[in-house]
Picture 1 (spheres, rainbow, N blue to C red):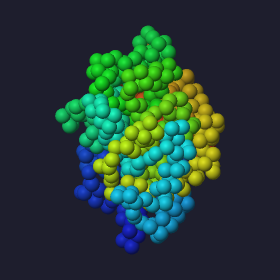
Picture 2 (spheres, rainbow, N blue to C red):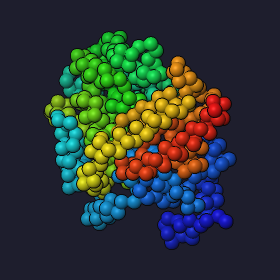
Picture 3 (cartoon, rainbow, N blue to C red):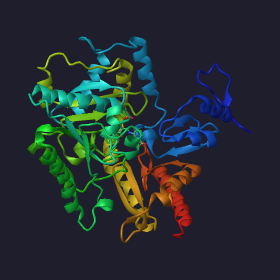
Picture 4 (cartoon, rainbow, N blue to C red):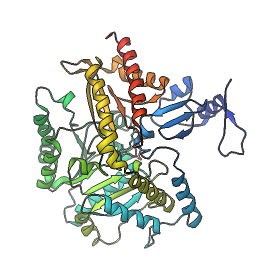
Amino acid sequence: MDTLTETWPRNEAPRTTADWQAADRAHHLHSFTDPAVIRDKGSRIITGAEGCHVIESDGRRILDGMAGLWCVNVGYGRPELADAAHAQMTALPYYNNHFQSATPSMIALAEVLAELTPDGINHFTFANSGSEANEVIIRLARYYWQLKGQPHKRTIISRTLAYHGSTVATSSLGGMPLMHDNDGGVLPQITHIEHPHWYVNGGDLTPAQYGLKAAQALEARILELGADTVAAFIAEPIQGAGGVIVPPETYWPEIQRICKTYDVLLIADEVICGFGRTGSWFGSQTIGIEPDFMPMAKGLSSGYIPVAAVGVHDRIFDVIERGGLWPHGYTYSGHPVACAVALANIAIIKRENLVARVRDDIGPYFQSRLEDLAQSHPLVGERRGVGLMAALQLVRNKATREVCTPEDNAAIFCRETCYDKGLIARAVGQSMVMSPPLTITRNEINDMVAILTRALDATAQKLGYI
Ligand code: PXG
């Protein structure tokens, strides 16, 4: 029998899954989904969540190996985040930071972020999403150079397979061909260099040699364009949505050197890496870089409410401070309720020592369990990851590093099999990707690995490997 699901607002009559799916089909345009799938199969209706599990409308509990979309760092079902929202909404539901105003929660959040971020990052501007944060950085970086008397420094260099958002400018900033093709290509003054994935792109080079080569592509591009036209380089410390790409150790020091040499600002996109995911508060600390701008979102509120921030280095702020009125702002920049929830979320991460837990305990356990799988499974060529983000590369041949092709449909088949068996994992290209809540237990990791192993077995069987 079709289970009835509580509705929101709760004074409506409960509906069945089929009812929800019909209304969804009739009225909702989904993100990153083929409408034909919704039409033919219907959507998955998620009605609740607890800890590291989400609950479907039929009551089935599914282990969320992706923490939503890489964001529910403190796990689901935290009453104190709801309490923080309630208290702030009661005291002051809205005021903005335009025209000389500020509210206590936005000030307190900026203050806390200044403590947590690397030295020199002491000012913050707020937004509602990672995309909006990156939009404001494009504007700020160009404005900075204009104020410095170098208005031609406007080009932003990014990387292939990067993800920096879904707005007009940030979808160009990203390096996902699918997102360029449907909008007439990439905007002017945005260009991409190769993403540093040794396993796929490294050929006969050692990882260390390849790391330098991939970084030097930045130097080559700057020289080709002219350093006097390049405003900034944007990259995630560890590329997330592109498939958890961990660069060789030689990569980041060389990138930092190149940015300094050519006076190119460094933007470290911390939207996924921030708030403990890599075992430090920020990915920039894990890899040891000093960025000029740090966009952050997702883990800032653990996804409980939309909020984003941009950390701005003193050397940038000092110039902008003297520039007169900065003509930018969203109605909801620094929304008091969102900032109050972010503060409560950061308080949980601190109190429960989640960052150290990821670095010293659960992160290494997660990576070692996946490494065992990579060593033993014929379909897995590489485990890559740091802290609680990881990917398994699906391959045709482990010895030659020949990866599966899109026609093999291996990752998508594996992802769907995982879902059927009770685990949410992502398929990115020919890799399986995971990024669970920072609160995940060893037992839950064991469950994840068990389901993943069965799904990989089923995939290998379908491909005729076993
Ligand atoms: N930067 C990075 C590094 C991201 O991962 C954004 C910016 C944009 O954030 P907003 O809040 O505007 O979505 C992101 C978002 C996926 C997936 O399928 C990843 C993201 C968004 C949607 C889907 O992996 N990352």
